[in-house]
Image (cartoon, rainbow, N blue to C red; front, side):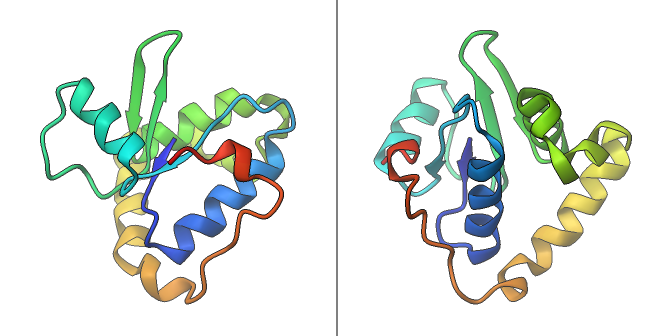
Amino acid sequence: MIFDGTCAFCSHFVFSLLKKDREKKLTFTPLQSCFAQNFLAGLGKKKPYPDSVMVFFSSSKEMGIRWSALQMLARALGKNRGYLAISLYIPRWLGDAIYLLVAKYRKALFRKKQPFTGYEDRILH
């Protein structure tokens, strides 16, 4: 999963996913990292990259952005998906609208970034 590494709300979201992902299926990288930049360039994605959550599954070459990314995460986490389960019941057009509304105010929701203590091996740089 690629996320905005400068966003405190995003780091809290990633930390909650790290705790839910007991089977260690997911890895994470900040959009600003060399890994993410090289990965997206390798996919032929042009800058500027979307300022949103992006999920890629290497096994199926599937990619999700915004609400579809949240739905992909919920499916990947299975029974451990918790609050992400709601994303599976909301249509994408409505989910994207909710996502964009939260994204607009995300930097005001949390001021301090969540450290990834204990999960450093799951964050790619």
